[in-house]
Image 1 (tube, rainbow, N blue to C red):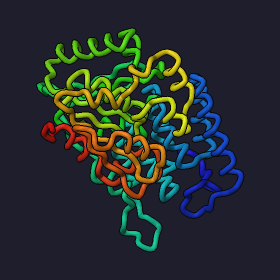
Image 2: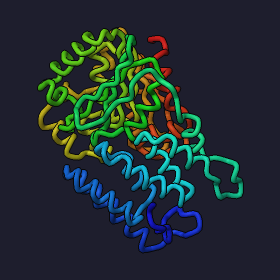
Image 3: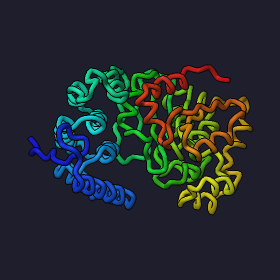
Image 4: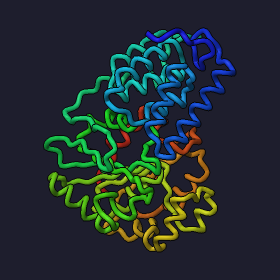
Length: 369
């Protein structure tokens, strides 16, 4: 049992957030992010465990802990700490603990938190996230869930399925929600899944890291992988910068459906300069490739027949709206704003609103244009 350290914890039931705790949580979050950016994963995990020990926590920090990759041997202690924290807090902090517990496979502990009384004037009501987690806990599937490690490719194959969803995470190899949680939620769908990371941060435009060295070789590698698995119906999904790969590989492999989430579409230098998000990834793009390599819209326009592409973006995110508009009206493209949201990460609100899984199901089942 962890000692009582709830005094000053953000989201605590009976203790308001205290200044020292807030400052410590913010500092811990910044330090962990810095360690991860520098590739110092062991140090990042050590700092995260220390923050849990000292209860220097915030909802964003708990969310980050759920997104980090941990050795399976550490799951029990992490789950024990998250459950204790969740029991001693309420509101968003408790919900984030429940999400993280789902990530680590502790469904019973997550349900315990979700069933605790909510200390509000309408205590019988659950928040949208609580309601979503409650209704999706314990879903049955005959597809094994993906086992995420440091591999570039992680597979979760459904026996007998002719479908495969190729998932391309963003620049920092994330989807906006923890990948184990994402995988567990889509596991009941009738499809195999292959997650393809981009450790080189090249938007997969130089192939699949450690499996190919050119884009054409990357196409050939995945085409062969699909043939070996007897997959006939390919679908792609990309989050943020992963949407570039979802479109390029989806078009090349003849995908029956393509879905992007807040993805850059117009990568031309002039457009991206106005976007304001030109960083090392895009500087590399312009130095190493020609415009013909990354002119996404020209590849979409040349697809024959047109391929079905769903473009999701937040209606309140200026840059993502601009990218979506740059492809609006092209054959096969359907732009879908996520309303009343201003963040870049649209998978999370779609998940919380119960719209993520239906959207992916539609991708798999909607007839071609």
